[in-house]
Length: 474
Ligand code: BES
Ligand code: MN
Ligand code: ZN
Image (cartoon, rainbow, N blue to C red; front, side, top):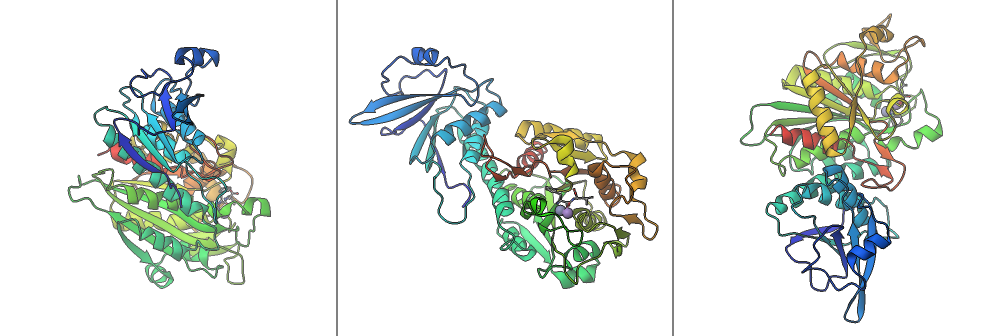
């Protein structure tokens, strides 16, 4: 359903185009239709500043019909501004059959504009939607290399849409087995552990979280191995809780109704793995999605149960709502023991606390390696998925001590607080000595409104940043 809009690239706008977009400063000849007023006068009349996202409209006559020109601002012409400009233009074309977007002169950032325009057309709806996005967009330029930029922008936007679709799907449809099937549709090799296999291999965290649900748990492994790979191996681990009720540590309704997106990290991993070939990534990349449904029932795990993770470490479960770290611990321990990666990055809607700290626009990164942290922060800023580095404060590690097991899954007193940091400290115990980063995307995983490149609901945060990071490494 995701992005229904088709994309083409041409040197001249279609001769019958009725909706044309031009950058403010464009040299209009010879593509422009005859306007009733001079362009400079029109822009002055509207006191247009040329900021990214700004649009000035003008009608024009084409035979008996009236078309429209959208003059769009591009701000400083950087990637962020062009994403915003593309999104504004595409939103203004909502419901129209076609839009021709004349690209800014020598735009080195064609991909950002295309990405922004396409992301803004994204909508998730079950049943007919009231308004349709623009059906077809043609990007107009004679610049060399534009085709590659358009393709990259489109690939990235469609990957984000894959992640949004998975996260927006209601949990009545989306159980762990369903998620594994979707992973199998992305054109990479997939291995799936069902509950028997999880038991046989000792994935006690994934099993414990899912044991209260009628839906079986799954561990999903996706493998991307380019023929000419450069020898490096990256493992991406995603939290795949297909619904988080909290379990016996039940959530209140207002918090619970948002928790169908608690597999957003896993969705990002699936979407990223599916886009690597198209983007020519040369590293070997393995994705792991630890999928379970967290439900209360007579078979659910109890607060105070002790579970044994992959690799043998024991954890006292003091709060069944701190379930993300339990499934991730298994996957991280497995990656460390079996996959021999150079770098491990996990991504998870892990804690409500990170929304308090960083809000809804910036994701958190924790890392035990400064180079990895810097590279991810850089890629985040460039890609439109910004990250802020948070500290792994060793002094808070005693928060997770347990009298009966190797670790507790939450702090029992109120001494330390810092819920997102202690969650990251818990995960660090399972990442081994590998260079590892953890992205807490609980704050940025959902958008409250249709705005810019975002639509209400799942954001797909992390797809653009990981694709930017992985393509830079190539
Ligand atoms: N899935 C939630 C975190 C979350 C909260 C994601 C809000 C998106 C929006 C996670 O499993 C959770 O419940 N975390 C608890 C941890 C606590 C029990 C230590 C939390 O943040 O309250
Ligand atoms: Mn939870
Ligand atoms: Zn959760």
